[in-house]
Image (tube, rainbow, N blue to C red; front, top):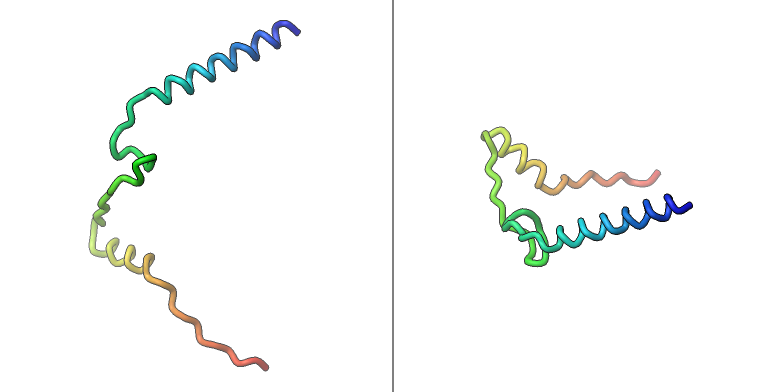
Length: 70
C-alpha cells in the first residue's frame, strides 16, 4: 500500500515538473498556431500536375442534376 502511494506521489511530482518546464520553454516562431495566431506559410507545388490537382481539390463540387419525383 505504501509503495503504491509512493509511486503515485512520484508520478504526480514528475508530471508536474515536466509540465512546468515545458511551459517555461521559449516558443519557436512559426512552430505552430498559438496565442499569436497561425504562422504564415507558403506552399509551392513541385510540378504543374500537382498544382492542377491542388486546384481541383480546393474547387467546390459540381452541382448534381435534380431528379424529378416519381
